[in-house]
Image (cartoon, rainbow, N blue to C red; front, top):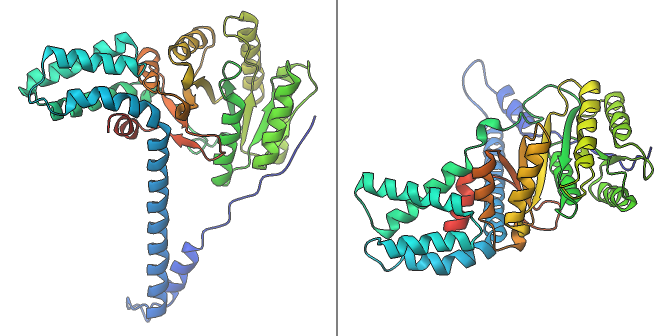
Length: 364
């Protein structure tokens, strides 16, 4: 067993200290606070508002950058639909369908979107292009939100420890890099994760996860190449319990999704996790490569058919494709929640998925 690095805890917020100092200066029951304490409170509040504003702006920037290639492809085609024309016509609806298909939205999903838009326009007795644009966005948002009821309880929503996150996906989809991004995200929340190298069939996979663990400052549990993946998971959960760690993130093998023995191995890992941590695995995330377009849809369907309990999807490499519309098709055909999008190669290039933000960045 190999253990690399140790995570640090998030420093405590000094906001409560300032607030306490202000409260202690209340005089004789009267609500009188010294000017200095009041100024301190206002300074902290203003600083936090600026930080939130900066974070929101950074997130919006990542959305825009991540979907820039898809939006560029759509903008030319949709420009003819949404701009210039005074009323929608059958020809413009045909152009709308074509534009969505070119962005790799599946044909069946495109038909569903156009049908909803047509019904919306008939009901509202409107046909102006700007109204159509709003209607298209709303139809996309509804589809992207269809799997939200299946969203798993996150580590913040359950007291169960250790929380076991099983990460699955075909090799080359960005699975290990996404694990590193998730680990970094948890560390920023004050949670030190344990990473588990359960892809023991490839020495390179163990080495890659170990390197990422060192980069993000996360512990890595690994055995030698060819050892039992389930045994690595067993040891990782035991280590998490002994150290009172919060979360175990399991990297799994990702041979071609047509290999049934891979699915059998993943099922075995799930059984071992369930036997050693109550309710585990608490989430099973499927990593898909957005650049593969409709092949990602095929992979998702195969995993969903062969592996029980997939609770969410992460779309990696969304910044490297003009086929971002595949996200809409995946949400439509699988009815699983999309949890995150990978928007770049850096450890913080992972944004929590938001249907409204996605539609805004996609359509404008």
